[in-house]
Length: 389
Image (cartoon, rainbow, N blue to C red; front, side):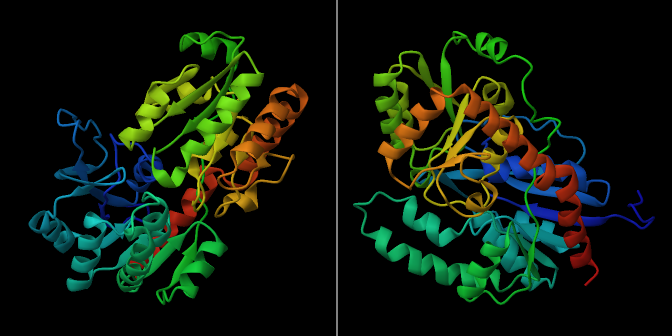
C-alpha cells in the first residue's frame, strides 16, 4: 500500500508501557494520534496486558497491536511490564522508525534496541520521570529523596540516545537542556479533538443519564490516581465545600493506587467511577473540573475539560500555567493548598455568570491554540522527517 506521497509506507514501531485498556494521559494521546498516522505509516504497537484485563480483546484493525504480559511488580500505580526482549527485538529490527513515550521497561528496550540496530529513534516526553519519582512516592519513603537523582541520570542516559525528542512546550525543552539532554528537541503542542470533546447540549440530561439529580453541582477529576496527582488535596477541599454547599457532588474518574481509590469509595457525596474508555460521558455531567497535580507537562485531561466548556481550577504546573489565565479561562490555586481550593470552588459555585464565562473562554482557548486537527500535523511531520534522516 502506498503512503501519502506514493511511496511504500514506512514501518513505525511504538513500544509503550501506557496503552488501553488502562487509560491515562499517554494512552489517550496514543488513542487519538495513532489512527491519524496510519495513512503515512504501517503502525505496530507493543503494549502491556495489564492485570485485571486478561480477557481484553483488541478490536483495532487499522494497526497491529502486540500484547506483552505485565509482571505483578507495582510501584505507585504503575505495573512493570515484563522484559519481552525477543518480541521487541524482532519488531525493532523490522521497523523503519521507533517512537517511545516514557522511560519504562518497554521504552527502555525500544531505545536500546533502536540504537543497536541504528534505527531512527523519536522520544515523546509526557512527563519528567525524575519529578514523578519524587512525587509518586509516599513522603515517609527514604527513596523519595534519592530516586529523583538516580532517575534524572538514567533519563539523561536514555534520552541522549534519541535522534529527536518531542516535547509539548518551550519550558519543557528548556528543562531538558538544563538537565543535560543534548539530543535534538522539537516542540509540538498537544491537542484535543474539539468535535469529540464539545459542550453538552444538556447538562441536566447528562446528569440524569448517570443517576445524578440535575440540581447537584458536580465537581470532577479525570485521570490516573497517583500520588503526584495529589487527590488528597481535592478530597479535603471538597469536604469543606460540602459543609457549606448542600447540593454538591464530587466525581472521580480514573484508577490507580488502591488506597487512594478507597478514600473516595467510602465517602458520602462522592461518585467514584474508576476506569473508563468514555470519559466524555462523565465530563458532560461536570460543572467544574479540578487539576490538583504536583507535576504535569501539558495535562491533556484539563484540555479535554476546557474543550467541553467546563470551568477549570488548576495548580500552576508545567505548560498549564501558560494556557490558563486567572479568571479569564480558569483559576489557579497553590499546590497542596486545600483551603484556597475550597474557597475558589465556593466562589465559582455561587457565581453562575463567572462559571459560564470561564467555560466559554476555556473552549475558545482550545479551539484557537490546542485543536488536535491542527497540532497533529506537526507530530506527523516530525516523525516523517526522522525517517528521512
